[in-house]
Length: 91
Length: 204
Image: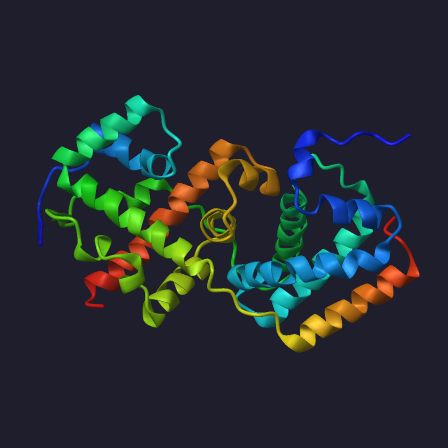
């Protein structure tokens, strides 16, 4: 559900710029409190905050989804490295 | 005369192996490859989304690591140094290929304009537990979104939100200030949030 709303006021814009820092715990306690107070009373900002939080969470949930290295490439890499390292020590 | 290493580096999981390799046991280098080939390959896939490009990046990175390992001074964790080399290898490859010029993302483009409908409630997808929300289709939307980010923003997002580096570590890896990392990360996340918003607004 949506409606027209004068959302882009100074407080909203200031909060918008700091959302990632807030979600990463990189702000001081006072600024965090300002953001929490503002988000409590401003639904559009709360929606921004929560959708951004979820975006980050989704990205992080994908992180462990790692593909194995293709076997042929892994073998090739090990052979190459063994060849180089048997020739000389790192210089 | 041997120099006592900084106590901080003793917490580096790779310290002993690197010491041994640099002391002449180059036959141990493949062990370093085994430790990191999977991480680097997946980093390459997240950055390039192309198997051949990812493999080339991994191979060139390990060759460079072998070449310069003697110069590694433990000013940072080995893993951060490794990613620094991987990142620069990745960027060099991109410059040689056919990628479009980089686009700057500005904060303004993500601020809802006056014509846009403003939500009066938090969208439902924002409050569903992640494990219930994430499926194959959504994973593809996120991966496509990450891939469509301009490279300098994609690098920061991948390192911070997928590879698990802190802001300070990402700054070290990329040779940028922490402020710069924060700015790029916020814009990259907002870009991705727009992609998800579009996906859900169009009836996912």
